[in-house]
Image (cartoon, rainbow, N blue to C red; front, side, top):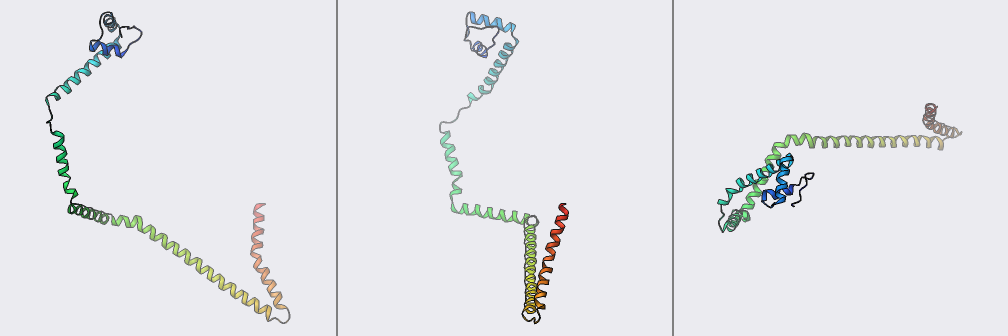
Length: 192
């Protein structure tokens, strides 16, 4: 600690100087270094100011003494203040107050909840119901149409005397394939 080089500034040397731990040659070297090094001088002033601040802050608190039974008194008061929460009647009253506050908050937020939560849900179910109804109606009408077409074809084929019914069935088959052929033709034109 007594070796102090002018090229190396060490905070420990400043603290040792303040505490009075430097003596002899080390003290002389440090004081000579202080005259030439502004950084060490600034550090010395900062540490002395800190010590003064601490002395002022803790100097007044030494006169204040806590009573010997301070912890016991604080503990007893804390237990007595919480004794009402252990009572069943007190817990029931707290629960009733919480329920009342929840109902009041729901009542105040009721209009906003309806527009933000319930209206979108209602719209979703209404649209889903419409889509399901449309799909059901389309399926039932397609089934009824297919039944009529099959009945007509069956009568034409079964009750035909000159083979005209078979020709009619083949003709209807080709007509039913016509939309698929047209769609395929249009796709081929788009690709080219």
